[in-house]
Image 1 (tube, rainbow, N blue to C red):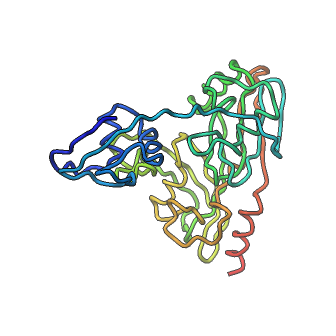
Image 2 (cartoon, one colour; image 1 turned 120 degrees about the vertical axis):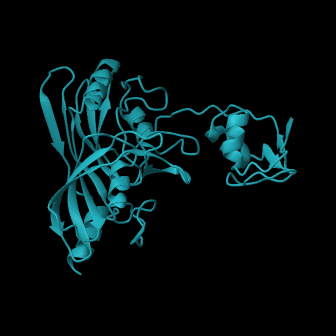
Length: 299
């Protein structure tokens, strides 16, 4: 057990303070708080608790349970597969890979059951995963079945040689037919779980969009990514005051239902890592998207 006496008001959340003080990850601090291995004045607190002068933090011994990625039988929508690559159409609500608190039911669990051959370049919990999309985003992902294919596909992503086209339904009418959002994205200083357009510790982010259909209160757009930042389309569309319909994090309008945000990775193109030939795949908009789209069409 370790005791930490707070001598003055530090005006900082306990998770941020202890992550730096103990030199451990914030995710570990969160797990320690949930297991009551961290107490303030002999009481459990939330991660958002701000430490004050006089607080006494008790740090109890904590051992993490090793996380493993297990194969699970799952109904995967495989669009294409060969000895090097799998192209899968991810369903709504499916997380791409296991993480703390979400070890089962992910796409990786299903892929491990489907194939014994997946690349290992991204570690034990992300076998085959070359790129990701959010849990509530549907659509196409490329999966590498060996390390050579993974390295080649990852390089294509880095060099912006892949084709990634998304369809999004956004709030409000966009009057101009095309647009480019060139705004850097980094962690939101007020909420570390979110991303934001910011100049602080950010990276270049560019989204090109084209209007496909306009409705009374929404617009259907096509987005092409030049970069691949976390939550990029969601952050950028919210930045120009046209958030994704049904986005529970960045959508500042009402949530229509619980089926997930209206964002779909529709087209995916890449150069095959072995044949060198360009391949492109397309997918239909899922029902969770089109049902909401029809509501706007009928207004």
